[in-house]
Amino acid sequence: MKKHIYLMLLFCASTLMAQHRGNYNQQDISRANIATSMGNSVLYNPAATGPVHKNLNPLTNLTIEVKGLQNVQATSYTAIFNLSQIGETAEEANQLAKGRIEAVKAALIGQGIVAKDFVLDVISFVPVYEVQVEKKIFSKKYNEVPKGFELQQNIHIRFTKTSQFENILSACAKNEIYNLVKVDYFIEDVAAVYKNLQTKLLALVQEKKDYYELLGFDMNDYTVAIADDKYCHFPKDFYKSYQAYNSISFEALKLKKNQGVTEAKKQTSFYYEALSYGAYDVVVNGAILEPVVQMGMHIKLLYIKKPPKADPKPEVKIETKHKYYVVAPDGTIDIKELQTDN
Image 1 (cartoon, rainbow, N blue to C red):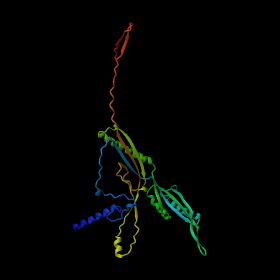
Image 2 (image 1 turned 135 degrees about the horizontal axis):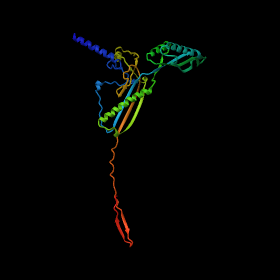
Image 3 (image 1 turned 135 degrees about the vertical axis):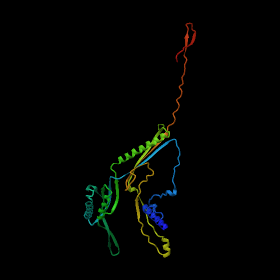
């Protein structure tokens, strides 16, 4: 009985683990689970590779390198939908498109979205042609003739809360607007974010300088060279794809039944893969629930040892003795040395 209970608990634990991990990393379930050719990251198994330690190489020069990352929730978003409308005349195509757009506006105004949050961008307004066959006794001639007009517009809808996006999708779908082009993220005060990162990184640089001072290094004995960088990444650049499915052995089935197998189309899934925090010394707002804008700053300082000061050369004092020549009236010359303080 205890053995059965243990097996049941082990099975439940395995099931819960699989539910928690999701489909992304189920290597034991599917041979084609991860479509690495579609841009996915390399799988990492710390249990198999073991911890990695750097080899330390002492140097006379000192390097201080700090990286900071801040996850910033957008202050506003802009969703762009593409609308394509065909009509027999230019006026009909324009009126039909206008009616669909006004219906979307009416459904969204009053739900935190106002009229100025809608902008229309006309992409194209061109005639559509069809081919008519002109039959003759011994030949056929194919002529392109106007069939109608096609109007393409992009609808820009601005919103401030991600919860509003569901209502936007619903309103567009009810009016047969399905083509979501993209969603842009905007931050109101970018300079304040970089200023916050700069303050935190400079404090960290000072901590590392104090650490070197405690080790016996005098930072005044070094000249400094600097390189710095800042960057901003948006969620649309960090979606990766994978496929999760489990297929039977097609080869065994073909040999057994001697017939071909029609494979079903496998669904490609996407997921948001934010920047990993492993390479950063400072992370602000590290716990994220939704896609965010990731802004970073990188500072690298190189302290180069100053050459030792040369010893001052000893002062060479030259003593000069002055001699005077005394000429007597009779023409004789008498040489005398004059004693001076120098």
